Image 1: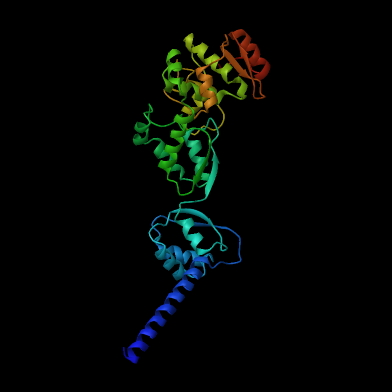
Image 2: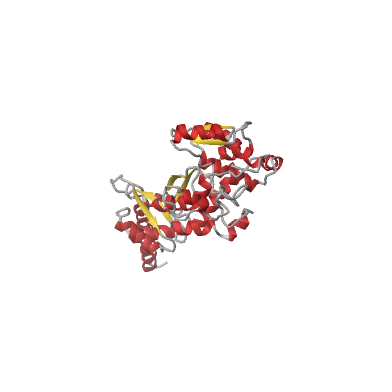
Length: 339
């Protein structure tokens, strides 16, 4: 082998070793170089954002030192097409490799949202909109979606009554459809226990009627201990073919309710006006919790037919109209009952 050929090979391998060494150095700098800044910041990746745009944005937020290095790192790791949309908690102190693993893993920031018992669809939508989880309008649209109503085999034109009140943890990237599905799935998991449908049939109700009754109990209950007693009033009235005369059902029928129920409201024409219509309204008036569903299925045994607020969250129960009118005068300072 000639000297010139040997020199060429030596030079060639030297260059290869240098390039390889620089590549290793570059990789470790790209993958593991960090800042001394430890403060975490929220970083949002919108659906459809490219690796280049995300890298530039990371550099702008001072989360990485080089957008080009980060892009190369993503290609080396085979993660260039695996970026996840959502909001992530990132810090400049995180090595670029850890940043890459975080934004490709789907470990988004989860926001805790508590949905109280007894809210209507519109009220839940308002709450979620205020917390910027999903737009209120989109949430309402999906609760009225025939696709989801048919999926869960819910009677009626909406999922009112079947959005389970609970504490949820949602990503801000969640879609309204997914959120509505999650809440409805939770209802059937937590509120429809084995034997509940059989118990409803034993009471001569279908389960939707139980949910409807539970929603009224939820709206009427001021103290948890009274749920089954309030349930007994409505069961007793239904057995006697008496009107339920429940204010919350009337309120449900009033568009843009101003917070005060007036005497004229008790005469409005609506299937939800239980002052005018006998029996249960056609569907739930709110989304009840599990305790109210249990109360609807297992009422306390009583002869109560009336109840009136004592103005402290509790109620005075009566078996007849005479005693009820006395209670109304005592606690409401009014001569006549509204029930």
